[in-house]
Amino acid sequence: MRKIILLLIFITIGSEISFGQIIDMHMHSYTEKTFWVGTARNGLASSKTAKETLEQTIQKMNQYNIEFAVVCGSIESLEVYTKADKRFIPGYQDSEETLVPLKQFEEYIKSGKIKVFGEVMAVYKGKTLADPSYQPYLAICEKYGIPVGYHSGGSFPNAQNLGWPNYRIKFGDPFLIEDVLVKYPKLKLYLMHAGENFYENTLRMMDGYPNLYADLGVEMWLHPMTKDFAIKFLKSAKEYRVLDRVMFGSDQMVWPEAITNSIDFLNALDFLTKEEKEMIFYKNAKKFLGIKN
Ligand SMILES: [Zn+2]
Image (cartoon, rainbow, N blue to C red; front, side, top):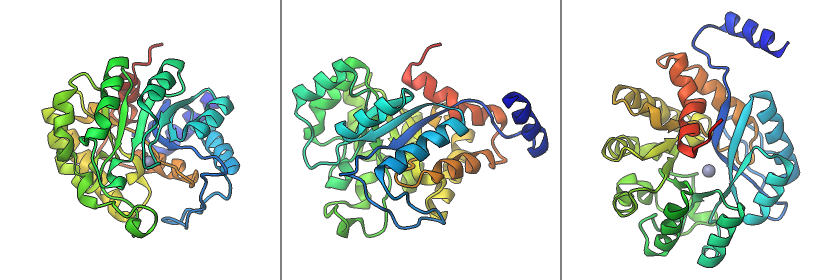
C-alpha cells in the first residue's frame, strides 16, 4: 500500500524527486538538562522539551524512511537516543570546554557508545581541528575507523555573546585543517555544513583530498543565505565531479520540522537528477559509513 501511495505521489510531482531511503548525517540530541528552546528560525518553531524533540525526530524518521541518523550530543543524551531507536548512530559532540579524557574516549569507542566523533565544535572554542588538543583523539579515530564530523563555516548571529566568546567565523575555513588530512591520510573526515560561506574552499579541498566528504547540514533550511551557499556548492560539486562525496544532513537541532524542509529543499533542486539526489540522500553516506547489506 505504501509503495502504491509513493508511486502515485511520484507520478503526480514529477520524475526528479527521490523517494529512496535516507541516511541523515547530522542530527542533534539533548537531555532535559542540555535542552534549550530556540527562537523561530526561517518560519520554524522550536520544540519545547528534549522529550518532544526526540519524539518528533523519530516521527520524521518514520515518515521519510530515514534508515540511519548520526546524532550528535553529550554521552548522556546519546544513551537516551540510541535506547529509544536503534537507527541513531551516536556521535560525540565536544560542547564542553574540554574533551572527555582520552582513555575514556577510547573506551566509549570500544563499547560502541561513540561511533562518530562529531560534531567537533573547535571553531566555537576559537580553535580548529588542527589544534594540538585534538590530535590524539584524531589518531584514535583513524586507528578505529571512526568518522569525524567537523563543524565548518559560520554560525548563528551573535554567537560570541550567546555562550561562545571565542567563536570567530574565520576558524570555519576548511583550508585551516589541511594539515589534519595530511597527517591522518586514512581518517574518515566530513565537513559539516560543507564549509558554508567557505564552500569554494571545500570544493578545492575535496578535489585535493579524495577521501574528504561533506554534509549539507543546516544549509538547506536555516536562512536564505545558507540556502544560497548550498545551491552554489551543489552546482559546482556536480560540475567538478565531487558530488559522490556530498551527504544529506538536516541539523535539526530543536526544530524537528527542519527535517521536512531539508528533504523538500533538496528534492526541489531541478539541476540535480533523481540519481544524484539518491546519492546525496543515501548512497554516499552508506559508502562513507561503511554500511553493508
Ligand atoms: Zn550541527
